[in-house]
Length: 247
Ligand SMILES: [Zn+2]
Image (cartoon, rainbow, N blue to C red; front, side, top):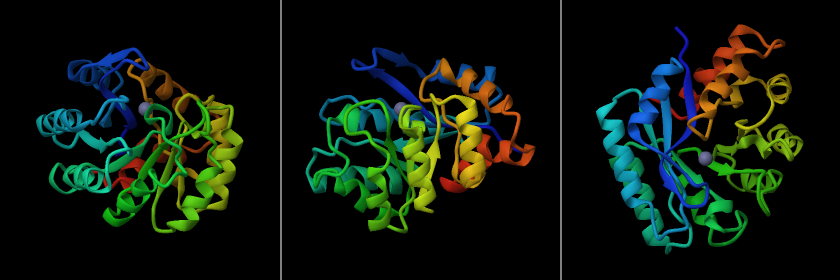
């Protein structure tokens, strides 16, 4: 039986995106869209930390076992120890399945020395690193080719797959590096079809980012005409289950 997983959605609020999603809204969204599970991230505020956001996601996941999985998002401007301690706590104690680096909302260059700790700790903990790509300055997906080569065992997930505008860069990066994965929220479905035909459905996961766009992403996935049912099932859930080791 195939599973439908939203591999990228947020809980909480953001002054940057001017949005707020509650636990109740996320659960209703799951039910309305017949989702089997969601990977939940705190909204990456330019605030000191997301520790309370992580605790909140942990409580949400604990109340909904096998349906909600947490993703850690810590501001990389923290010291090496503060940053790595919180990521380790999230993964080893709270059971989180991935780490997010958000160069746009964190205001941090993903190739900078300060951001490198995200790659190092994700590599050390053997969890995928999700990165925002596309919209914003210095969000070029091609930058990650260098990082993927530097950390060949680290799986790097390009969120938004370059956000349409830089889609071809994201796809090229994935063609060049077998450890680069794509999450094409916000991209048109014919782009997603092209990505599946180019790199296969084993490296592409469905995510929505926003609450309201969940139904849209599912409709896009269901309306792709040139992929097989097996590829659709992988894209909509099976690949995420394998990539993030969702239990
Ligand atoms: Zn997001």
